[in-house]
Length: 180
Image (spheres, rainbow, N blue to C red):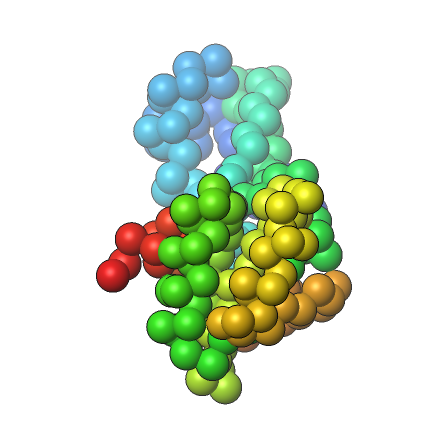
């Protein structure tokens, strides 16, 4: 087996016929591909540092001469189609303030793709993707400002995802609204 890290989000895996037998992988059998593919991905993570956790994986499999195959694994962001710069970030002093806002946003049908984080400074952050910032969310800005402060900045979302601890990476508004 040969692993080639093409980029942070793309990996090429070349398997010989022996490798395919060893890992129970077939080029045209999707279920067989799934059964044997996890150990291969774990090896790619350990050997190359390919991130297998933070997104969905798109796998393309092509047969090669001699009975082996070539696989191209592409990590696709969980928020496909939404740029990081398209999010509103709300910062809160307490988790109780964040939960109170989440209850209001949830009753109004907002925050379906949201995520919540605990910041290293002791504050909390709620990320609301652009898909939720339709014509209603600017009207909600006054409500948001009652509980915390809203920030629209290209780099703040990336900073939060890198330095903060995720409370809920998906569907945070609903999960926090149901919390209490």
